Image (cartoon, rainbow, N blue to C red):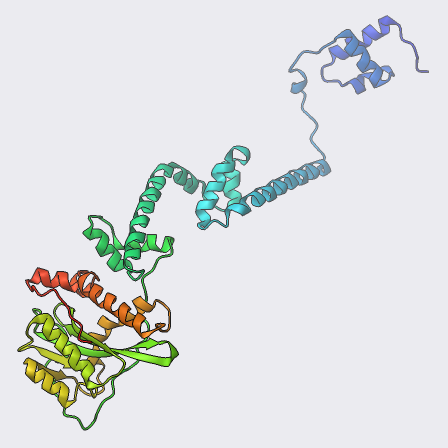
Length: 400
C-alpha cells in the first residue's frame, strides 16, 4: 500500500536518489519509489536540489518514431508554406509599379531583416547575386535617374517649343546644338519613359488631275532630287487642306532642291492655274531672280497649262516633268509639305475655319524655313543651311 505521509528521512533519500541519477527523470525515479511524480518534484524543489550540468546531454536521446518524424516534417512544411504565403501577400503591392525585377529587388531589401535574403530570393525567383549587385549599385543608379530627370525636363522644353511635333532625331540635334552630349538612344529611352513622341505621318490624298491633251515638258531632273547649290533646281506641288463642312483650301509650294527651303507658296480655295503661278511669283520675289533655274512638277493640269508655261518663260525658269503616273513626281515635294498638316492638325481631321487654316499655314511655313530641323540637311533648318552655304536671301513672301 502506498504511504500517504512520508518521514523526512524518506524524502531526503528520494531527493538524493534523484540527484545521483542524472540520466533519470522525475517520473522514472518516482515509479521506482512508488510515489506520485508531482510529490517527488515538490520534494526536489523544496530541497533546492540540482544535478551536474552536461551529464544528461551525454545520454543519447531516443530516436523519434517514424510517425513523430513525419509529423515534425509536416509541421515544418506548413510553417514554410504559411511564411511563403505571407511573403507573397506582402510582395503583391510591389509588383504593380512598372519594372517587375526592380520591384522584387526592392521588396527583398525592405524585408530581408525578417525573412532573410536567401529565403526571399528563392520565393521571388531571383538570383541572390543579382540582388546584391543591384544593392551595390544603388548610388550609381540614383545618379543616373537624377541625370535622366534633368534630361527629361530639357526634352519636354524642346518638344513643347516644337508644338509637340519633334521626335527623337530633331530633339537630339536641338540638344546637341545647345551643348548637350547625348546619344539618340538615350533620348529615345527617356522619351518613352515620359510618354513623349513626335507627330507621325499619315497617308496623303492625291491632288493631281492630269490633262492628257496638254503639252508635256521634258524630264530635266531624271529623279536626281538634289542640287549642289540653292536657286538652281526647284520642285512644285499642290496639297489640300481640309476645313470643316467638307470644304478645302489648297496649298501650292515651290521648294529648293538644295536647301529644301520653301522659296514660294500660295493658298487658295481653288486649284486653278493662278494658284501655282502665284507660288512661282512668290519664289521669284524671295530669290530676286529665278533665271536659269529648273522647276520640276507632276503632270497636273495646272502645271501643264499655257499660263504656267508663260509664267516660267517670263521668270527665265525651265520646266521639267517626270513620266506620267510616276511616283517620283512628288519624291521631294510631298515629304517636305506633308509634315505641315500632321504637325498643325495633330490628330484632328480638319481645321475649324479657313482663317484658322491660313494662320496655321503662315506660322508653320515660316517656321519650317527658319527653325524646323531637316534630316537631309544635317538636322539644320533650310535658312541655316543656306547661310552656311553663302546664300543670303532670308525672306519668304507668300503670293496669296
